Amino acid sequence: MQLTHEPRLLLAILAPLVGAALVMAAGKRPNVREACSFGAAAVLFGTVATLIPGILEGKTFHFTLFHLLPGLSISLRADALSMIFAVSASFLWVVTVFYSAGYMRGLQEHEQTRFNACFALALFGAIGCAFSDNLLTLYLFYEVVSVCTYPLVAHHQDEESYEGARKYLTYLTATAKGLVLPAMVLIYVYAGTLDFSANIRTGILPDGVPQVVVTILYACCILGFAKNGVMPFHNWLPSAMVAPTPVSALLHAVAVVKVGVFSTVRVMLYVFGVDTMDQFNLGLPTAYFVSFTIVVGSIVALSKDNLKARLAYSTVSQLSYIILGVALLTPAGISGGLIHIANHAFSKITLFFCAGAIYVATHKKNISEMSGLGRAMPWTFGAFAVASLSMIGAPPVAGFVSKWYLLNGAFDAGSVAILLVLLTSTLLNAAYFAPVVYQAFFGKTRPEDAHHHHGEASPAMVIPLTITAGISVLIGLYPQFFARFLHLIS
Image 1: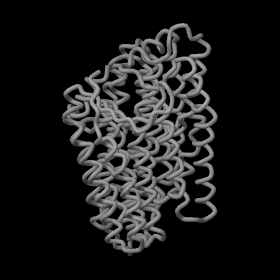
Image 2: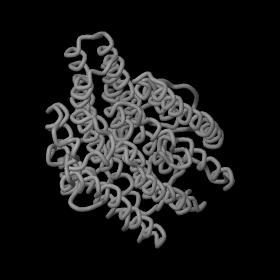
Image 3: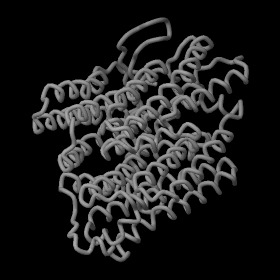
């Protein structure tokens, strides 16, 4: 691994932090406030983009902030895995700034300054996780995301939002402190370091650590990063749907849940390593464990009439594809899991953008109320249809690439059970997405809507969701961009 000292990593994490400060300074001047948000997002994405050529040349960028103890530091690192998450998150923040302005102004939401500042701070934590060089740094930024998104979930400041926010924070901080923190201490005791391994095969645990200890540490990390949505620690996710739709998009596509699955797979591959997981038979049992979440999450989604609730349980299910793919321990499976970080991000944020646009334009939240709306809102529901195809795994959209890799990974692992899980979940995905699209375009307009002239939401909302839907198609047709990073992960 070619390590290169790189101050741009510091700029990347400072951009959203400074952006949050500028937003607070702008106060109630909305144009200035949103300009600050956009400027910070643009600087972050631009900085991340400048790292891409070096990463594709095989370099690994590094920047140390503080040395604490031997083998223990607060330091940053950009490698191929980092870039899959960082590129997706930083670009989607740019798009979300525009969408949020349209949404928040359209509904005349209160406390928009606090909202934008906390949004930026959440991205500060997410990018910090993406560029963490060791488990300690990852843990600290993971906790930053939890704390900074609490005000976003509680944004409406009513009983329901406070209850959802309390559950959100309790689940995420309790699992991290109760499981990841003690596991991290023991890993340091055994390994003498918390720095991530240079490759995905070896991990950092030395030979001679008892199997039972390795298994317990591994289980603590899988369950402790509860932002990954794995059952039974998933209930915070649908509870957080009381937040405004841009926050839901942030939770499900840009920052929070992606931080959870990214942290999980980073630890699986760079703390434990493929060889250790294979030696102690941790791979397939993990795949079987998260398969329960994949199937049950989809079944629960089928039962939800509220659109955001259906999308929430879809996220619970889809996140476990990422962990399942890595747990297969085959090149195709790992590739499928990691590329789904990006593919899911673009498709799921499109779905939540569409849900928000529908609500702003019609004030409808339930699927049963949306019959015929597709004819009045063709751009919004067209984008929803495209993103739905991606979630189902149909070509030529991004999700097909993920499913193709995962199916090949399950075949290479010789697991018929995982193949059946993937096929079953695909049918369930179609069962809960297809009726939404069909009713919107081909359903009869409801009598109470006949005298309403519903139309699209503002361009500030429709343009971003069209862009993200278009990108979902592009990375389905041309998956080489993210695939080039996959080839460098070894």
